[in-house]
Image 1 (cartoon, helix red, strand yellow):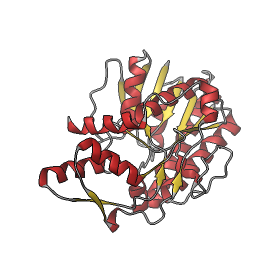
Image 2 (cartoon, helix red, strand yellow):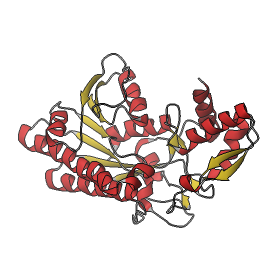
Image 3 (cartoon, helix red, strand yellow):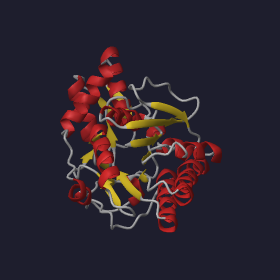
Length: 312
């Protein structure tokens, strides 16, 4: 297939483009101008994409993809909290621009259906109990990031209803793996623990470690996206999750054991999120039934892979 990946130079995007190229697809990697340079696999074409610019978005749509995986976004709570308006401009309005450009091509060019996999977030469910979240649960975003992602979902589904553009929504829960930046919590833990081992420090700075999260390996998330692009039903939403929860304290301790360091967390108010969701675990039954997907890596393998990658 001829595929377009937005946000291709991001953490998940790099893994996804590599997977698609090695599967034999013709991939166009859409990256924000001035971003991180990537050594792409042979056959991958890079183009610039700025979601706030109509001409840039139309140019990306005019590459004529058969499928699009839309990853480009303000991707962290910290960044979104710093400028909520910009998070909405990029995540919600940018998605509206992209879906509209693809829907317009569908109406005008008559080139068949371009399938759009819109990547949202499990955080759109907001606060709730300890039961795994299902796609039928109401969404109640509790952060600028999650709210802007919910807006992106609404924008994509509106274009689907109006133009018939096949839009599928993925709601991934927390994921990590090789190449994730240290501004995210688990790679940050690894970096601080390695520094503590080198200096003999007995404490490591952390935010609140009470929240429970459903942690997946990025490569399993990418596998889910590939299957959803092929087999997901337009207008439907699919959780991408392991279905098991671990507290951040448990993850902290397991990483410390893997690294071989005895440290205790020390709360740093600058790292704490004021509106953190206490418990966020997803039910991926719908995804599994639709595609046959299941995680291929255990949590232990995921954490070990992260530690090994950070050691390289």
